[in-house]
Structure formats: C-alpha cells, structure tokens
Image (cartoon, rainbow over all chains, first blue to last red; front, side, top):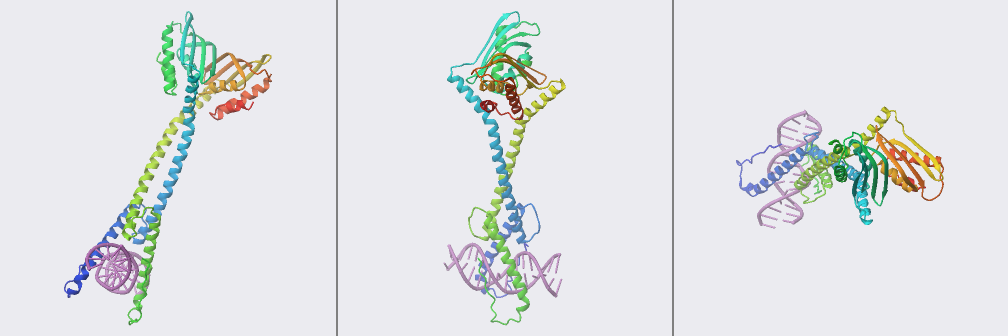
Length: 204
Length: 204
DNA sequence: GCCTACACGTGAATC
DNA sequence: TGATTCACGTGTAGG
C-alpha cells in the first residue's frame, strides 16, 4: 500500500525535469488521499475488507446506521421529555394555581393551636391545597402522638382548612407554642418538598 | 469527473489484446470507487469541496459529529430514564406497600352510604391510603354538590377510613345506591390513575 | 495460469 | 502560466 518507487536518474533526465513537479505533486495527492482513507477506516468499527472500495462502503453503511440511531434516540428523548413534562407540570401548575387563588381571595396560611383542657387541643390549619397534604398531615399527627377526633376538613379557593380536636396519647403535656411550632415547621417542609412528613414527626 | 477516453485502435492492436482484460477491469474498479465516493458524498450534509480528498475529509468530520451526538443523546436518555424511575417508582412502591398492609390486616375496601333523613347522608369509605386520595375525595364531594360536616378521617395499616355526614346543597334528593355507585366508580378511577376525580364528578 | 487490487507516471483540464 | 485535480493505461504483487 505505502510502496514508493524512486525515480531512476540513470536515463536522460533533461526531459523528466519539467515533469518531476507534476510527479511529486501527484505523489503527494495520492498519499494524502490514502491517509484520509486510512483515518476514515479507523473511525468505522466493523471491518469487512481492507479494500479501498469496501472501506468507503463500510463508511457509507456506518454513516447510515449512525444517522438512524441518532434519529431514533432524539425521538425517544423528545417523547420522554414530553411525557415527563406531562407528569411534572400539572403538579407545579396545581401549586401555582392554588397560590394564586389563595392570594386572590385574601386567604393566608395559618396554624392555630388552643388548649381545651389537660392535653386536649383544638388545632386549626390553613394551607395551600396540594396533593397528599392531608395524608401527610394525618401521618404526622399519628407520629406526633395525637389522637384525632371531631376532625373537619374543607377545601376552597386553593386552600385547605383543617380543624381537629386532638389529645396526646402518651400523657405528656405539651406546650401550645411547641405544637404550633412543630406544625408550622411541618407545613413549611411540605411546601418545599413532597417528602413525607414522617421523618420530621419522628424526631419527637 | 465522469470523463472516459476510448482506446485508440489506430495503433498495432495485437499487443493490446491481452492487456484489454486488465484495462477493462481497472476501468470497472475505478468507476465503482467513484460511485462509492459519490454516494458517500450524498450522505454528508455539509459540502466544502468536490475534491476526492475533501469528500473523505468531510465524511470523517461528519462521522465524528454523529458519534459524539449519538453518545450525548444516549447519555441524556439514560439520565432521564434514571430520574423518571426515581420519581415514578416510590409512588408504585407506596401503593404496593399499602395493598400488602391492607391484605395482611384483613382490611377490605368498602363504600357505604346510609340515608339519615331527607337528603342528609352518612358516608363511610375505606380505601388504600394513597397520596392525594383525600384531596381528590373532597374535590369530588364538592363537585357532587355535597356539603360536608362531622368529617372524620383516619389512616392505619395502609388503609384510609373516611366517614362524613353530608347533605346535598341543591336540594335534589339522590338515591343511596346511586351515591354508592358514584363513589365506588370514583374510587376505582383513583386506583387506576392519579387523575383528578373532578371530571367524573362533573358528569353529574 | 487467472483474477483482484493497488501504485505509479503521465496528459489533459480547470482554476 | 503555474498549481491542482483528475482519469487513464500499465506493471506487478499476492491470493
């Protein structure tokens, strides 16, 4: 492949001098083309033959494969982006709508705890309505050691009003401010992430 | 490019006869190679020059581009698949755990509606605990035209017990069986999809 | 021996 | 005109 024949200068070289330029140029051209062909060969993974023609042939099929795969990949990517937007966006939209509705109606979030007697409390909570917020609330109440009775829940204008009469199961009397603080913190953690509030309740 | 010179047979053609085989073969070879090069050219989008060498050069850069883009695309795809599994799996896991817990404790789903008097009803529902199921329930109640009072909700062993005393806002008296049917259908639609139950309630 | 594939040198064409 | 590119025919090495 890379064989090169030196010019024989034993002959009369006067006639070959003006041709030698073209000759060398042609040699350079051929070498360059061979090099390109070789690098092209190095890029194509599947090898069928070392022929000049088959090198190009393999390159052709390889390019076609690459084009098809990249097309399929981009289609899949678009599809996944679309579906992920479908599943994620409604959630964000829902929250945004809830916030807007609450602001429009002049409702603001609130956590109020009043002591009825002993370790029996009346709890009132107003938060943005959000998927799962009530379940999280109930779970948190359980883990905080509260037994719920006379629970009332209503949703309106993007807000959820929760009121319940609770009493601690374990007899330890808790401060009203302490409970309010715990519940407020829990509401905040529910807003920032959809993480279950169990861990927070478990710290107590 | 496609220029072809016919052999001149004005000379002594006896010496050329046995060479003509090689000649034609070489012509075929050259033509084939040119054709391959041309089809390779047709696959590469960016054109810099019609040169034989630059054709291969463009093909080389194009292949490199394609390889890089397909690599990036597949990486993104893997990333998205991973993240989508992260966000979808816990939901499915949560439901599976709830079902398992309920089965273990011998709890089965239930929808019971009793007429108290007039269009005032006592509703009792036991379903799998699932994120958002309560909010959906409340929304559906609103759209069904029910006003809730004396609502009680508890979650335990993967189940949610919901009981409420409701009465229709719009004065139209509904059959107990009809309400039970509506609520059961709603529970089923909540199980199969996380779709909001609003549409279902709106049909009435 | 044939056949395939290649490199070579050269004349011509195009810029 | 000089540089570059091309197609051509040929000699030849290896299967």
